[in-house]
Every structure is written in structure tokens, then in C-alpha cells.
Length: 116
Image (cartoon, rainbow, N blue to C red):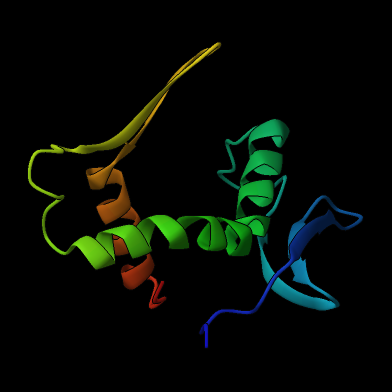
């Protein structure tokens, strides 16, 4: 079971511009004020931060399959693959699945107390 409040999370703004992230009717965080002493972030940056925080549960779920790959492989990718586990050439460019990225996903989830 996850230790954090389950998603989905969403964000809203009160009358004075304070960003609040919610899960259902419950407030998760209220630390995204749009005004105040020393606040040098633009409204656009605060909105982007609130959106990122609200997406956290979904980002965790998106990382889990990659972390699981690293967990299964252990400390190193299969012999002969190098860091690139698979790559694709697409019409708009290329993409690659790297062991180091999978391992980083695993490290981040573990740091947050989440198992894949």
C-alpha cells in the first residue's frame, strides 16, 4: 500500500490566489501563494508547479514499469546491451529505453518510500 494520498489529485485557486492541491475534497498542499513577501515566481510558473504537484500520483504510476525493469535486472543490464535496452527510430525522431533511466526511476520511487 502506498504511503501517500491516492490520486487523482487536482489543483484550484482561492479568492486571494493561493494554489491548493486536492484529492477529492481533501487538501493535500497549500504552499503555492501567488503573492506575498519575497515571492518572485510568475503566475505561470506557480500554475505549472501546481500542475506538476497535482500530477504526482500519476507520475508515480508511470515510473513503476521502468523501475520494475531495473529491479528485475539488478545492478547491470544484460551482457551485450550496454545502457540502451531498446531503441526506436520514429518519423518524428528517435527514442530509447535506457537501463540508467530505469534504475533512476527505481531510486526515486524507493526514496519516496514506494515500491514498484
